[in-house]
Image (cartoon, rainbow, N blue to C red; front, side, top):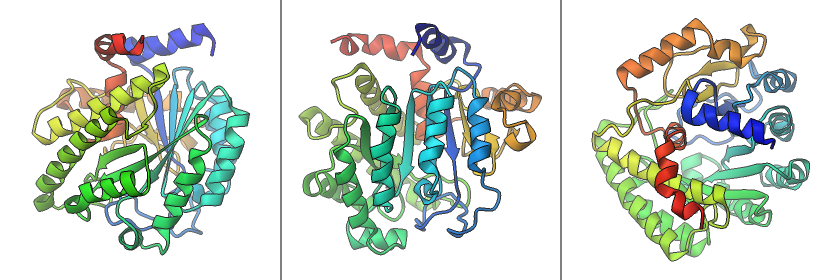
Amino acid sequence: MAIGLQLEQVANLLFSKARPATLIHFVTERCNARCPFCFVDFRPSTDRADELSLQEIAQITKNLPRSLMNVNISGGEPFIRNDLTDIADLYLTNSSAQSLFISTNGFYTSNIVRFCETMPDRHPEKTIFLSLSINQIGKKHDLLTAVDGMFERCIATFSAIKAFRPAIIPSVSLTISPQNYRESLKIYDHLVNEQKIDAIQIVMARSEGVYNVPSDERMGMAVAYEELTRKILRDCQKGLLHEYGNDSFRGRILNDKNILSRELVVSHIRGERPFRHCQAGSLFGVITADGTVYPCEILDKPFGNLRQASYDIKKLWEGERAMEIRQWLKTTKCACTYECAISVNILSNWTFYLQHMTGYLR
């Protein structure tokens, strides 16, 4: 990447904070699983109504600002789309994004392996992350997702894509929910010790969309999350977890960011406000399956729809509605446990880099 573009992106990320550095694109609301804590209002697997077409996504990617550094693709289940490799290719070809992160339930092993076989050759200079969701053990995971064989399929997928390291960086995402928090340490230990999963991220189930966390379960979930946070830190220090690796500048940044992110989630659960101002709607935004743009996936405050903005997100980002929402976010000091937003808040804070510079330059 040209040094001029790098400097421009860093200036936006750390100082002006005027245009998106990270976007999440929910490419579909279709999913073969039915996890009870998911916020998505699922569509049947054959219902593509209102989904942005590949041609529309091509238009969107051609109009993205040069500030864009990372794209997250999610769903629904993104690999239910047969054109997902083409969607990913459009983002990495047409935009300035240097990394791509895909969240998947891991069921479509052959589709995922084909993706891994194709993308590194097309974009050898880009970094691609795949996060597989596992939230129980064996048949319990199958029951949780309402898909027979889901656990074994996901384990097989993780094993298969490990072979593509370092071009593809795989990890497992464990969501702490009312359905599993009492067993979260057991689940984690099984994944690490029995299944040899060496990269695990944890997230908290949140009240958003069609799902609400029962109030009487929240404290138990918080305790489980905090316990698991300490466990993961110890196992990273022991070398049991690979995470994003420590052999690169990017890897060390992301590993330190994840440690701090988990600490900030715990702080928020305790009632503290770790950030003065969330960067949702400034550096971070969400595109839904039908092209609606939001500052984040939790707030029901849309900037507008890309179909009515000539597929140019800059028009929505710089519009009056977006400015009003950003002012609301600043005035209300909006904060939550949404890990993606927390990550951007960390990475856009220059003091984070100063505090860790010695380790990065080793």
